[in-house]
Each structure stands twice: as C-alpha cells, then as structure tokens.
Amino acid sequence: MSFVTGVGLTSYGKHEGLSSLDLMSKAAGLAISDAGLKRSDIDGILCGYSTVSPHIMLATVFAEHFGIRPSYAHAVQVGGATGLAMTMLAHHLVDAGVAKHVLVVGGENRLTGQSRDASIQALAQVGHPDYEVTLGPTIPAYYGLVATRYMHEYGLTQEDLAEFAVLMRKHALTHPGAQFHEPITVADVMASKPVAMPLKLLDCCPVSDGGAACVISREPAGERRVRVRGCAQAHTHQHVTAAPALSELGAEISIAKAKQAAGVAISDVRYAAVYDSFTITLAMLLEDLGLAGRGEAAARVRAGYFNQDGEMPLNTHGGLLSYGHCGVGGAMAHLVETHLQMTGRAENRQVRDASVALLHGDGGVLSSHVSMFLERVR
Image (tube, rainbow, N blue to C red; front, side):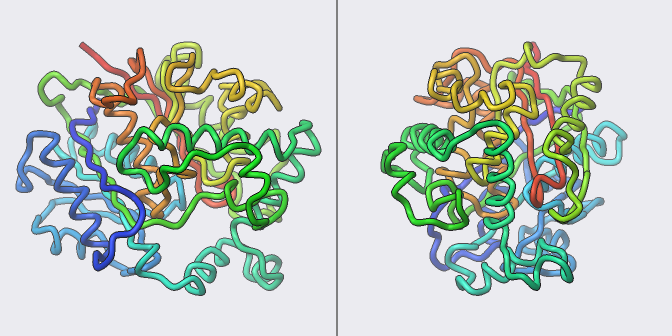
C-alpha cells in the first residue's frame, strides 16, 4: 500500500536561467512541503532523464544538488511514460518497505536550454537506427503515420482530431501555470502550420521548461488520503516498424492488468488523466482505455463528456497540448492535477467528484504504457 502525500508543479513555458536541476529542485521542494515533510525525511529518490543534461547518474547528481542523502536513488527512462513508471516503482518500493518516503521528480529546461537542432536530433533518436532514423523522421512524423492509419481504419477526420486540441486549450485557460492562455477553435487548428500531416502545429504539444514532483509514502499525511489502488505496465515494441496492429497496442494490455490489480472497472472512474503528446495520441488512448468506443472519442469531446463539468473530466490543467511538455515532467503534471482534484484543491478547475481517478502514460510511439488507479480514502 502507498499514498500520494504531496505534489509540486512549476509553471510551464519559459524559465530563463534555470537548469533542469533547478526546475526539478523547485518542484521537489513544493512537493515535500505539500506533504508536510522535511528534506531529511526523504529516504528514496526517483528521477527521470533529461535530454538537456544527460548525466549517467542523474538521480545522485540531483540528490547532491538538492541537498539530500537518500538510501535509495534511481533514474528511470521510459519516454513519456516515465513519470507514471517512477510513481509505480515508488509505490512498490514503499509497499515492500524499502523506503518510507520516495520523492519522484522530473523537469527540464527544454525550451531555453536546448537549441532547435538539438531538440530535433533528440526526437529523431526514438527511431530504429537502420530502418527509420536514416530516412529522417522524428516523433511527430511517426505519430503522423499512426494518425493516417487510424483515420483510415476508424473514420476520424482532421477536424475530429482538432477537437482534442480545443478542449485542452479550454482547460488550460483556467490554470495560471499553463504555457498557453489564448483560446483556439477547430478552424484555428486546421489553419495552423503543417508539421507531419495530418498533424498540424496545434495538434502537437509544445516544447517547455518546467518541473513536477510528488512524494509517495507508506502512510497517509493528514486528511489528504489518496491511495495508489493498482497499476500495471505493457511494452509491445520500441520502433514503429515493429509495432503490432492498432487494435493490439499496449494501452489495452496495461489497462486490463491495472483493472485486475485494482479491482475496479472503468465505470468506477470519476476523473481521467491521459497522455496527450499529440491529438491522435489522446484520441487513441481514450478509446484503448475504454473511455470511448472505437472512433467515438471526438464525438464525446463535442458532446462535453470530457469537460470540467462533464461526465468524465479530463486533463483539467490543459494537458501536454496546452499546459506544456518539458519531457518527464510533462506527464507528471497530469498526476499533480489529479491529486489536486482528488483533495479538493483545484480551485476554479475543481470537478464535482474525483474520488477514483485513472491515469495513463505513453512512452515512445505508443510503445510503453503505464496505467494507474488512484482512490480517495476516508
């Protein structure tokens, strides 16, 4: 058993003059304070990778920078699924008695600390070195291929995909820390610059500076009792050329295992936090997770199903698409927002009921998946 006892999140966007370690430290300090702990209480540290600062011992470098001496330290690399993978590992470490309070942290200065060419080079390396990288694609191009196939099989249109960008932007407007605060329409998305067709600029998450953190503890802290109910992973491939059929991707595997581990059904979920690096990512994952039927997620967006006041509030902070994406910390913002919702601290974004939440992270090109259920307990 484990509890999420504290969370911390910086604003996302430009943080001139702050390094990855600085942004991680800022978020970590907020999370520890939120948990009512001192730095000396932290006996475990899990941190994600940084493309800006690719140190081979990042966890211990961060521990030194932050001023702690944990008995357990580990850096994790599973692409965009890293944040939830670290949270899952922290859950198991605490449950096994290895540590009492595990700090999970991610952050990068990707926007101000890395050139455009360096960013493109980093994004290109996800491909197979012989069969894919040599042809020049980056992550948006791979997702563009996936989107084309998914649209062909399930009848989605570019306008359907645009709905997800509009929804995430609408949610970001209510969060002061979001990178974007200008409303957009489907027409705006359709008119935005082509990136990797059918994906256009507003179908893609931005590059951001930022940091996010949480503390996973063996015992709850005060009245905020948010428990990790169950979680699971699935890893079906690394490279697009080795990917299974669209109907056999890892999200369906991980959610089935997580539901079994948690003893809950999708019908029990009251709040959803789902990875949204691109509009196609969000559309596919919502359907893979059972939050919408095949080809039906866009219709549910139009109907208000995923609105803040809808039946299944989704990414109420604005998600990667509009709150921002700073690497590992990007999806961890989903976890922070979920905790705030579950503890009634989301202010003007507060939903009616977030007693049971589903979180899902995706790494690579729908390659690695982590599904997790959190519950509020009395």
